[in-house]
Length: 123
Figure 1 (cartoon, rainbow, N blue to C red):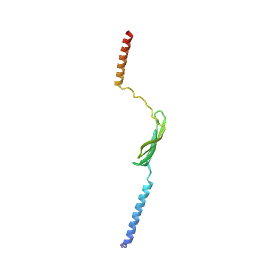
Figure 2: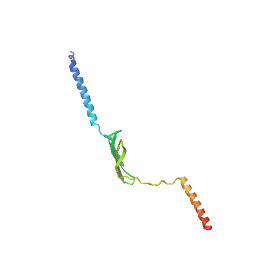
Figure 3: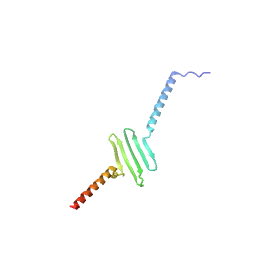
Figure 4: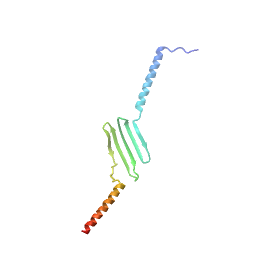
């Protein structure tokens, strides 16, 4: 009680149908692929980026500083480089504290200045 053999034209038709279904499913997967590259959030920071990795992306990130102030940056990165489009985060210059060598030199200079002042006062 064996099933009747499948005729060659039917076999070819089934193979063609399988190939079409495979190609269609690949096309659907490609189109449905999300454009999100980065998308995460923590208590103090959030970052979202969309686009094509290695070609062009747009994104934004934000964070809350330890003093409670919130900042955000919107950017584009493409063949022209990384560019900030909008930001409320402005850099603030803070002088670095002096090194130990600088402090020692400053102390020596102060001593020399005091000696010079004493000599001038004696004259």
